[in-house]
Amino acid sequence: MDDPSRDIILAADSENLNHDIQRLAGLGASAIDLALIISFWGQWNVVVVLVAVGAGLALFNVLFLEWLARKTSRAVVEAVRMGINALGISVAGLATHWAPLVWVFVPYNMIWYFGLDRWVRPRMFLFLVAIDGVALSTGASPSLAVSFSLVGILGYLVSEKRVTLLRGTLTHAVRQREELQRAHQELQLLHQRAIEQERLSSLGLMAASVAHEINNPMSFVTSNLDAMLEELREGQDVAERVKEYVEDLLPATLDGVKRVNSIVSDLRRFSRGGFEGHVEYDFTAEVRTALRIARIQLGHVRVEQEVDEVGVVVGRPRQLVQVLVNLLVNAGQATPQGGLVRLTARREGDRVRV
Image (cartoon, rainbow, N blue to C red; front, side, top):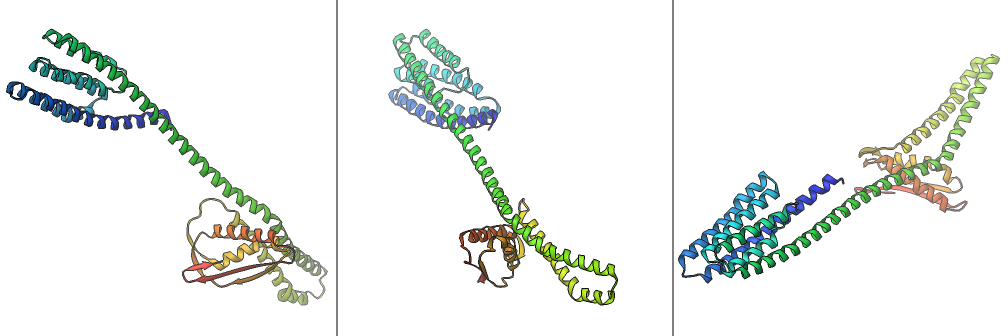
């Protein structure tokens, strides 16, 4: 996976995490606002201001900023959010004469306003300066301003470290996923190579068998053709000779040629690579093809066949032949001189047993 893809994944995961934090932070802010309302219960002017500020900030954060997030960057959204919250805290502070519960909003906001861009710390600084400036200029206690500002700064730094750790963990997880994908691709490649190697190995074992099988009928064909050519050249009893050829030699020669064609056809089908889809094929014919290909590896043993006429089935005939050839070759190699290899094939209901 390339760097842009990794950044997209990290950004998407960070965005999801940010939404979860926003929802949790909203619940915390509502709890603090409720505590403020209860503490000033009876001072209705203050209560009205607190309710209005709390409801306004909640609607602003849920509705407007979610809409703004779809239109612009997260950095812009966070800047607007901090500015509006600083305004809301200032209004609540003025209405309550900067009660200690109002100051709780300062570190609380700084803890969960983290972001992932380079303007996070400047936004924190402006947020703190704005609230402390309004508070100190309107008669707030300097000790409360300094105390809660320090708590906010320390809380923000801890939160920032946690975000950095989380981002590193997320990057490591993405990197591990990339490595797993590469390993999976390599395993697929090795599996394909193993299949190809098995086919080539089987072809190597069959080379001697094919040479032997082709040599016998071709020797017979060559001998017959040489004899026919020599006798035709001598010109003695040509008519009688031609009759003999028609009745005996030529049919035998043609049978030898057909055997060669059959062997070559079997070999070509066996060695063909590439994808093979499911097709209808004669199961019994493919079993006998495998037996012909593996014949040289079974020359030292007795081979018994009980192959029924299974009929047409659906599958991958080339793969079936390859599996059967491998099994027959293994059987030949594992069976001592004069031993027995038995091949049976029959239909059992909707299945075929070999």
